[in-house]
Image (cartoon, rainbow, N blue to C red; front, side, top):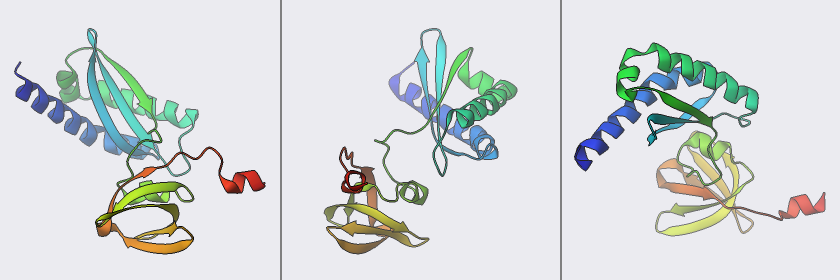
Length: 167
């Protein structure tokens, strides 16, 4: 299969799985962040990335795994798209996940982030979020940034936060 066709097919598979699994994952009380499909020997690896306010524990991963497995096994179009057996992996997003949705910013209150704001790159702590944007603490100054002006952010790893040392 030519690469363009393979890429288009992979994109269609991903979009189909996002449509099918979105409501299933939401029904368990989580958010579907992404789906990745890749070959794994004779099988297909289906990686489902989920998150929730307060994070994901092993019980939630097990609940999502059961619900997703049932949905994949019960959907004829998915069966045709995956073309055979698959391995299901349910995981949470890593710390390197870009912050793109308001819920990502909300879930990272108190964390140090780096983000493009207009033409500059800003490093600050997520202080608060609202329906209209995010408030960052940049070098001790609160700075409100409306959602449309906010680029994709990334969490900065901190090994020795000052608040933790003082406790």
